[in-house]
View 1: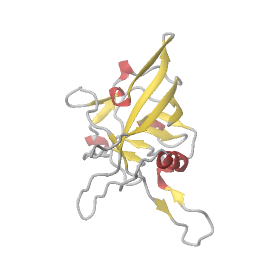
View 2: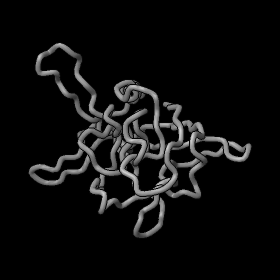
View 3: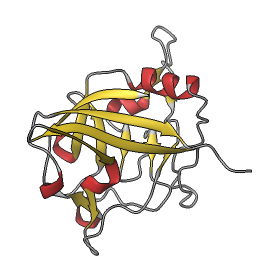
View 4: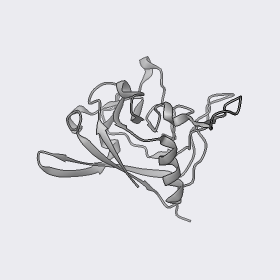
Length: 179
């Protein structure tokens, strides 16, 4: 499945790789003008299986779900570039690219207590593809990754990211599990 996105941040610590438009652009490399629920449904239609979002209580339990290969395609200096999305994210301690794949955690729904409105898909708060762990993330890392500002483990790898406002095609590909 393909998503049409745009570069909104090129440097600094990160909590999110891809956020919904007008949500977390201050901590995400890309944003998209789409309902995260539709992205979730498209992944399910592509036979991806959602798992469970991260849990912190009673103890930390990482996000689970089918592995999703995330790649980016864009034009830079007149040439089409394509590579794993993780290359735009670096570990702040080692300086190396993100060494983990995302999993389809599936976010969660908020039910209107009065029953007047449809259920709200929580990934629409901004956590479409997360780098820090959030219980509302649709795609998350299956590792412990703090969302506390002082402890953010990952940052944008600025030289690898195209200029602001560059259109980027994000490809989400469910990884078939080997039996």
